[in-house]
Image 1: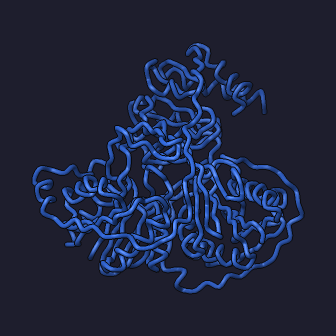
Image 2: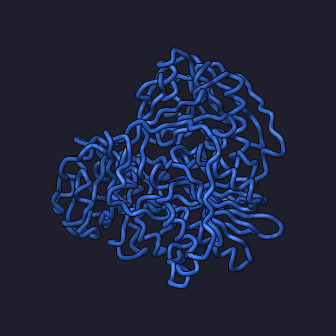
Length: 322
Length: 248
């Protein structure tokens, strides 16, 4: 009765969150006195999961699964869980796993808790800590069903090395036409750039930047830091940036190690969306901006003067620490 | 086409969050309840289908009598009928089971629910509902077109968007993007008056297990004061982020 973990990959390469959920699964398995089995789908270097505590890999190779399909992926993971007799399943909280998670939950009649931010409080009863009220609070939630699904928030638990030897077995789920009743016809994705969901650093701009033509310095700062770019709600409402960059209670939540807010005053809805970030920096010319109360570091000043200087200083820092 | 929009009654986005009864319950004192913002985008999209394609739009919520003002607002916006399932929405699986019963009995072609409610953030009701009913499902939906040949939905993915082709019956987990914020509707006096004459049916819940239980809540730890850096000394911020916060 191993702990089962679904480790996401993109073009064969494991995502950072895959290593994080594997690390989390190892911790849970230790508590339960068992091992970790991973389900991988069209991944390349399966045995490398052994570095993060995975002792067995169910390796799925299937061209039909090259493009993510929530129903088919959920069915694959469910069959993996059944094959292993797994009663605890660990997944991430990415857009794709939040899509397949509820399907998996219904298939296995399992209690599911997403947005989990720490190792379980206890495993008997099984209680986990998760964010609630859009990051304005936490809930300690008991999963009382026999099968349990935990969705771990990105950047919440971290990647921990726990080296074991991982055996890799081919696994062929039974999939039929009924698993492919939705078809992906186009994917429009920014490639080569960090995304808000899994970036360690996020650089975000607000209405204080005065217009979309001024986003060049935000993107340059993000590039220097290897960061994703984001924006406040008014900015996406005005159409300066896409909805996909809107951070906040009704937009995307951010749980990065560093969040830099530039020209964002800090409405309560925005603060809720970023409160899970570990270090928050605010740059704003209004010393009364509410964001200063929520930030760790701040600069009161004109963003158009401060940000270019910050880019310059970061470039110097990178050159010295290269 | 018959559409069901699932509505959650949630604290207004500006609400301060507090807990009561030894931090075991959300403190509703002084809190204004509204239609969950993700549901509001779905409701407006459903109204568009009603006006352009002649769809019938019903709304449903799982909640006590205190949720009726919220669902009446949905009627005032233009929904034709409302259903309130008379139970506390304590667990996503339980809520989905209740709504599945309504969908089964109502013969809906399209169900739109918010991708998550902004209170408990479970984000599981639409997907569980679709799976229980063996309906197609698209989550984080930011665009939806339906015609005789099927449905085309756009969903937000990490770092972009994906266009999906599928068919009815369909459940979508909707969000901002289904319609623009500026297209959201505010009930007018005529709508409010008409809503009083529309059916608000109260049905009793079916037996369904609760698979999760929130035992206790807590607020994030209080944060220390911000450390301000002089705008003329930006290098100090780089130093602090490297040596103190250790994030670069």
